[in-house]
Image (tube, rainbow, N blue to C red; front, side):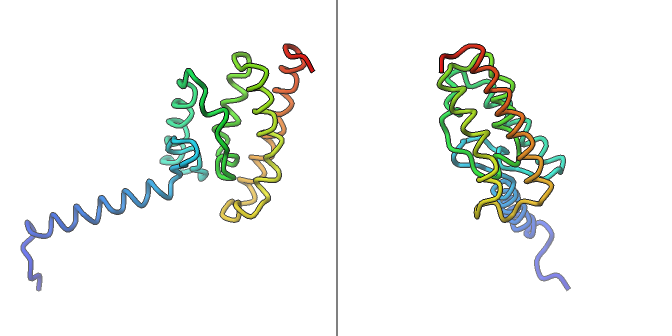
Length: 149
């Protein structure tokens, strides 16, 4: 027997629903280092894919490229958002920014195999490693083409 009428249960259900959404947002990859939701969302759910798309759009529309100098998390390497942004924007980056991007790409193995990456699956780690190697090669070639040693 229900002691509370359905109309009185609505506020409680709303509170629990909002709490669930907040918890989902936190666990879905709000990366404080980047300020972008989704940069650390690494699973292949439609929610995470959308979060990564939104994070990439945010990074790509940053005219000041502040994201270039922010430290990535292991989940950021696994999601590939930052590395893909470096790959996509390489022609627009300064030589210093290319060097930062290459260091980040070269740091993928240590970050993805380090203590902060224990929640990542082997497939997520592998994809991050492959993307890191690819981006490092592309940035190195761009640096060789435009930058002095």
